[in-house]
Image (cartoon, rainbow, N blue to C red):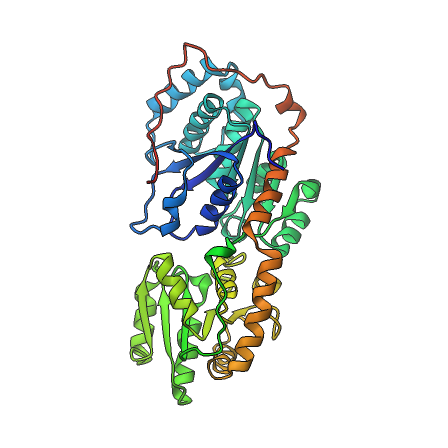
Length: 428
């Protein structure tokens, strides 16, 4: 239910970001519902390509920093914030171990949130964005929530104490799969009631279903070229298919730290005639490539550093478009890829099983249609972004502050306010 007087502040590390279409889908759904919203980015974007749907976002965007801060700038921001929010310096004791840039962004966000009339802060990823939202919440009394995804939960660098602190102080912690939900509730039993599962959603009108009855023997894989995506296993599986005399082509879409390694593997296995690396592509091109392929392959794995995917958005998009998927039993993926019901499931790090599943979908049109039809039905039932964003707004509107937060004064800006405004601009 929409509260006419509410104003949500979205807090992200970088905006826009090429790979985070789920954040933009969410923002657009809130805008469509008439929710007043502001976007706060800790740093400017680092990507050189952006998805087309970024241009549809109308909410104002504020950059809280340029990506670095000098000590004199930090102290000036804290002193000036204290003029607006008396007690700032004392309450910042809880941020004593936070990085200086996060403290600076948190102080900036606190003043901006009061100035702009923000009633709730929501951070995507339980990393620096959540740290900044937590600091601003402590200073202003404005409640915050966060969405925890995957790397921010499972990576070996994640501090359980830090994550637990953020969850404990949040009004709600949302996470993107039942697997994540169970993991977090078991890890932080004292916060169980405030941790909920809320899938990432899709605007289904942007992903019309097309029957996969007639498709060329093409495999497509989309994602960052990092260990957890398992693309090296896909290349190995393609080698097996080639050796078995299977006719196919495979398109790898994305970029990242393993690009050179993957290209070398393709060359060593003499697969250049079968596999093309297309680099990052606009979403309209990715959608067309998926729509016209026989198989979407997502051979995700758990990395050596503990990192893994939560629930890849590209799987949801492919299922919506009507392209059957092959994936692995990692984290929340089995919640959508139900083996031989809505897709094919193989064990992670098993190129032979992956090759067999791909071959079935390349040449069995009846299996493609059966799986794709059921997959689309599941997406419509569980992943409609309009319905999911409505649930999210319900959580925002029922935020329960701790007694400490409830007792904080809600200050208004005085004429003595003197913090220099961060760079503010729109993305279009």
